[in-house]
Length: 407
Image 1: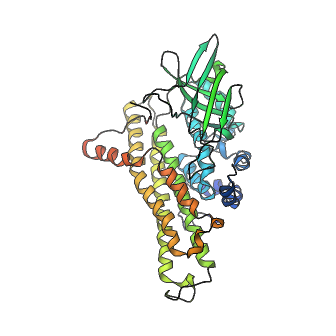
Image 2: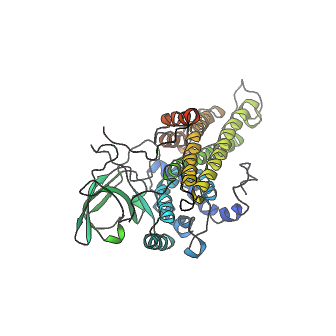
Image 3: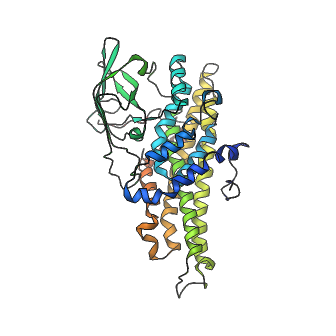
């Protein structure tokens, strides 16, 4: 069934349905076991493998490089659909798609060619940016030291989302002098240990735990020539979270509608002989679905702003490119509280359409709220409205970096 026929609206391009049709059978397989994996803590190694086999991880590459030439709105719409199947899988691939954007935007032809070839061959990248140690804001305890022609890495990372499933870890660190270093660290290199010790009550299957590096030797080809991220990185990574929320909302809406349609028991004080015909219950289902629809529409509108930032050429007009990037940040920040509230309300309200049996573990309906609440706690939304307000009132551009650490 097309997205339009399902009532979620047309995709972001004329060819979107053709593109999405390649992946929907894989999404369906992933969704079929999502509840079971959530209950048994079954990490999605196989599921991510299926996506790699289908070339989902090469979406943004050009066809001649083994990809699909997907636009950013097409990518984010597909991430919504993947999140309908299992939001954990989307989260686990977030760093990979961010690294892909880094590669596509890199100013180094050699780095770009190397990693386009590796991504095109199916290799994937996880996250190694955040730390929970005593490092101050903007600094890292993880250090890369020069040793002749090679580099030696020592340190510890947390929130290493997706790295347990990946071939490389996209690492942010610093050298002996405190200068920033960005590297791609092979996950199977001697001295690398990745531990699934993430114990959050939601998004529990993303392997967002600890990575330790002890004397890891890195060749020069693994050190990024320019450590800076791509210009619209902050907006991109946050919009992945919003696409994930929108997908959770769609899955919750579909599940509650199905369960209401199947329900045979009614309340004596209800409004119909069948729960499916009860107008109050129908209204609850409608609100859940409306929230999910609006969340997806907002995400796709913000994705258009990211595409404009991507298309802007700093070489011909730096000011215009920087403005496009700032506006993409603003559009995504404007979306954060709205999408978050819509999905949190939907994943709570769906229980009002069902009886007490809806809280049974076998249905797994609680995972929608748990996963949404966990994603909503990333990069705190309480600051987003202030950033947007400062722009609206005073023209203040949003911050270019979001970092966590001690003062």
